[in-house]
Image 1 (spheres, rainbow, N blue to C red):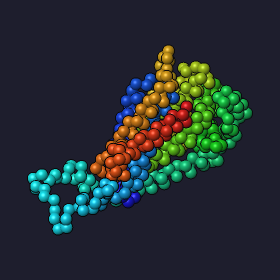
Image 2 (image 1 turned 180 degrees about the horizontal axis):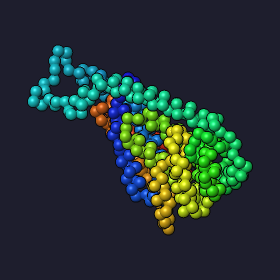
Image 3 (image 1 turned 45 degrees about the horizontal axis):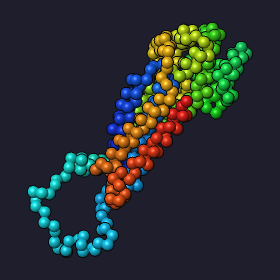
Image 4 (image 1 turned 180 degrees about the vertical axis):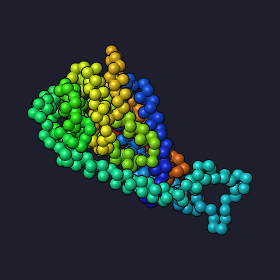
Length: 380
């Protein structure tokens, strides 16, 4: 199978694969408490990574499977060629009524095969357009740290230094006053910069400003800027699937909830932090996609979550890994159907009965489980 065919079939298979992944995530989020933000975030990030990994694995599997037609069944060892092939000029006597017709899957495959190049071209065009949009957003974000900025008052730098020690942030963080942004935001990964609008320095109390700074430092400590870059890349590659955008939205919402929890732990009062969020809402303004702002997510949902009493026992952390592994197994089981479906090429296991009926499925399952476990560990 050539690259175009493998990529086209992988894109078609990703429609049901990503839908299955989103459905599994929705089922898991329905049973995980809202206050267990870290668990919900880990599940959402794992699902988003698997949404990209499974189509890529499908494309590689189809590409390595060989041509779709022309597969020759090798004769058994010791058997003569004359025993397996009919004499020249003769055909097996099969009654016309007994000949099976093409199945629905084969007819569907025959109808979709000519459209594969156009599907790949449309996908590439969408990726290029969104890549240009992503690159322009990255350039705008980089300029935020150098255009219209100036040093903040010494009291604000001292507050940042105290919060850096309290939150155990190991990387050097700068804080600048910006005339461009309207809400506090953090940009950058290796050398993060916290941008504070001039209105926040004058319109918020020092304690409220400390709470919002703690939220931004939580993004720095959790490497959320780097995760956001990966998330934007996955959105660009899988732009055609609504389930991907839904899962990506869940990742952003739960990320804000995780940082809200860190800020509440730093300031010690959820009600006070919610008041700071409400006071900042009047300064809210859309931010570039690659910046991490304290105003991200639904403010009403965030405030309602903060006002909800904390249950006596939060969702066990160990169960997050088990749920993520279960999600990977579900997708791996669905991916194994690709190998046995009529849309996939005959693999070595299918041509050699001694190789077993599912030659590549266990390896694919192990790879997905390793990827899932790595994602869960990375988000803790």
